[in-house]
Image (cartoon, rainbow, N blue to C red; front, side):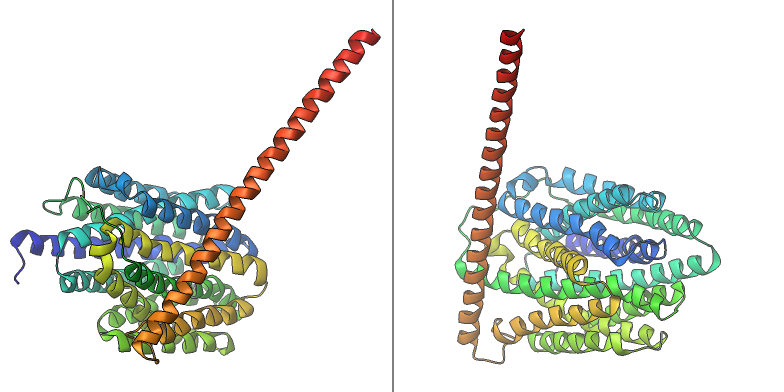
Amino acid sequence: MSSSPEEIIAKVLLVVEAFLGGFYVSITRGLFIPMISYSGYSLGNMALILLPTGLSGSILSLILYRYSDSLTRKFKFLALTTHVTERVVWFLLPFLLGNIELISFTYMLGNLISAVVSIFIGALIYSYFSSIQDVINVSVWRSAAGAVASLLGSLFMTFVSYVYNPPQSYIISYFAAFVIGLGSSLAFILVPKFPSRIVEKQQETPVEVIVRGHSAFLVLTFMLAGGNLVGLSWTPFLKSLGAPIYIALALTVTGNIGGTLGSFLFKGYKSYMVGLVANTLLTGLIPFISYPYAHVGISFFTSLTFMAANLLAMQIFAEVNARMGRIKASAFLVAGNYTGLLITSMVAYIFVKDPFIGLILSAIIKFLAVIIVLLAIPETAIIPGRKAYEFSRLIYSISLTGFTFTVQASKEFLKTFFEAVTLMTLALLLYIIYKLAFLIIGG
């Protein structure tokens, strides 16, 4: 079935949006960790900055998943407004380096808006293209365009950091990202027949769809948690080896080249499985390589193979979005990013006092994703498909029980807490009344 002229134009504009957005994202996100690391922030402080972002992003994604109607009614207005607002917020970061509370809050706010924007873009793609293959093709081309632009962005910020000293280099890079980011917003606005609202079918999501989405969510979450922990630990590790900052930024350059090639290299579930296994093994090698320049090459291969995780999740959610709901499927996918970030920040803050340990733990976390891929997703499993589905249902049941217990325990804790506060307030009030009465009578 051939695409209509509007669909062709929409595909081009969405790829342009990803290309310009990729340049903007590569600088605003890619420079952030090196920027705060070389500004004197410890690994613990960096984890504290990331923790509120991961927690709030996960909660927001869950809320939008449960109450997706809040986004569907004014879809176009909210999508375009948040797209532009996101660029403005991220531009503020280099001006706030001296205040950990402000930079943490702004980073959290920028990520929350980014989460909503990602949900809108995903829902738009799911709504615009009825064919699963069209959704996958557009997503692959967007990934490739974003990776190419990220390469250009990383080259730009590496050059700027080499020519200018901080903080001027940070401000120049973030300003360039802001301007190019507004260009991506323009491409987004120009998408023809942008739906003003999305009408979702009111239907109960089948259990097998939820279980399948849950497995993809866990794989993406663990891979991103491990990947984020690599990103958090790699720069301090290179710094401990005596590497200059441009070596740390060069990781982004080769990483983006690898990501671009990886978008087209992996096709089909079995290749996704191979990529995930290879990525986990490569991650385990990083802390044992003491020659700084070799890390630039390792970054190429880890980014190339990491695309397998993104493509796996993308494929599964493209297949289930019609039965799950476009906003819900997109929110589920985005939730994986922020739950992964939450796990990263908690692990880094509690367990990681040294970047070497952080890199080891990142490989262990990714190995959890490999276990799920090998045992719980029928298309990639090394066991019979029916057994894999049963195992995925078991994991889902355990996760659901744990989540329900946590929510209930949280409710009971809050209830008990407020009851205790109320009793203490009443006791204090009675004590004050008693003292006043005693003074009056005594007086």
